[in-house]
Amino acid sequence: MDILNSNLYRFLDRLTNLFFLNVLWLLISLPLVTLFPASAAMFAVFKEWTEGKERNLFKSFFKHFQANFKHSFLYGLLFGFLLAIFYLDLSIINEMESYSFILTSLLFVLIILTAFNVVYFVPISIHFDLTLFGKIKHAFLFSIMFFPTTLLCIIIGIATLLLTYLLPGFMFILFSTAGYGVFRLCYRTFRKVGKV
Image (tube, rainbow, N blue to C red; front, side):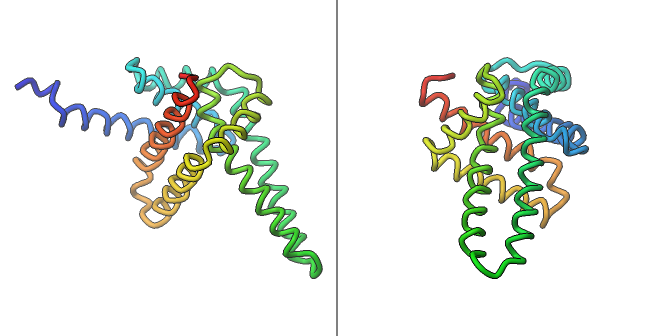
């Protein structure tokens, strides 16, 4: 029996690659401002794996990090700016006595719409050659058109953060595994609309 072609070997090889990719992603996204470029690079590596174009993991990651840096970095700054605004708005609303329920509900809807957009931004960035505005617009449209997939991706993200909080030692494999799950869901969505 050729051990290199066995299912066990392929499984362990993929698990090892997920571990190394996860560690690489953690290190590169550590400054937080590089979270989205690092995520775009990780998703681009997933795309190569899915299309059978496996290359050197580290070279591939850094190549895609550089190629997707500009739009992903700007989107990350926009996302950080929106989070700061949401936090300030919530602080102001908490001080108000009248209309607080209505304003909190409106803010909650805006936060949900932002989360929806985040789900698809990175996958769209690596699949389509669009302007930054085009990526944001398409991420929003895909998130609404394929609501069940969007919801499932958000659940995966929340579960990953919760598991990382409860079991911090698993952070070295959880993010890439969850990212791969989100990538596969989005990839399936793109195939449905014939864009892959």
